[in-house]
Image 1 (cartoon, rainbow, N blue to C red):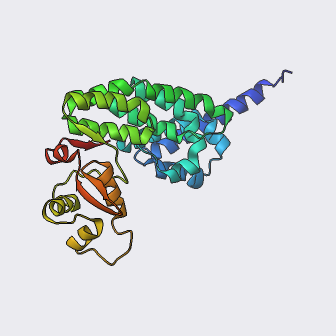
Image 2: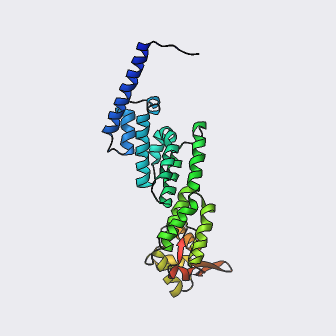
Image 3: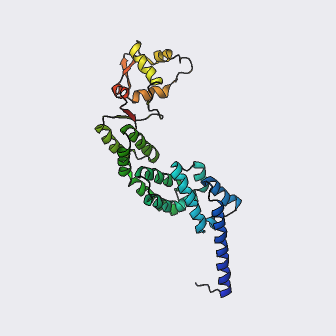
Amino acid sequence: MKIIITESQHRRIVKEETKQMELANKVKQGLSSADLKTTMYEITTLYSYSEEEIINNSVLMELVKEKMLKEIKDNYYISKDLRDKYGNYFGLVGQSAAKEIVQGGSNPYSKFLQLDAVLKTIPHGYSITESSIEIVKEMRDGLTYDAIQYLFDNFEVAGAIKRASIMKDRSGNYDEIYPYVKEWAIKHGITLFEKHRGLTFIKKDGMMQSLVNYLKDVNPKTKSGFLDYINSRGRSTGQHAYFWKAAQESGIITPVRNGRQITYQLGPNYEAWKNDNLVAF
């Protein structure tokens, strides 16, 4: 059904729309130097724009996208608090923001992390956002090989692997990323091990070095003996449990069972660790 309006009614509508756009442009100008958090707070609280008004105003939605992109380019991240409060707005501009990232001048690694950040801002569970999620995911995953190639072309091997590990941790794409990284690691004599609780054992002057010294100097080589060695007994039965498990999983040390007693010795990856060729992934 068509609704017929008079010329004067049409003029009033156009005048009102123009007025709203002029106001939105003033708001955008006033927030030109604000960060994403301040921008979202002020347009929803200080200026009291409703969700519908923001979504239907191209200037305000462009402002949201501009601040969202800056936050992502600066940090590769948007806080959970902001995502929870304003995810509906981010979801609507997410696909457009992703296209700008892909077409921009950043390197493939930076684009991958930026797209991953966009992907995490788009709320799941709504039919209006599901297609955007799939599209942005395809954009991100399509950059996987190029991003890893860029890392190994521009960083020393251990540094490239550490950055690839960030890609893996943030995206969860272990199965897609690991084969490329493993191939490069083998070519360059690097041994990979899976991180446990974020422990990477890069430093040679920390607890791992104390453990290595203990295994070389003291018999029998037991966990309780090591805790005595570093004067760390009596605090709890699980003292340094995460460290101990990570040390075993890294292959720097390995357990040896003798009846009911378990002792430890240097593991198959000790030499790689000593020579800085053991890298967490």
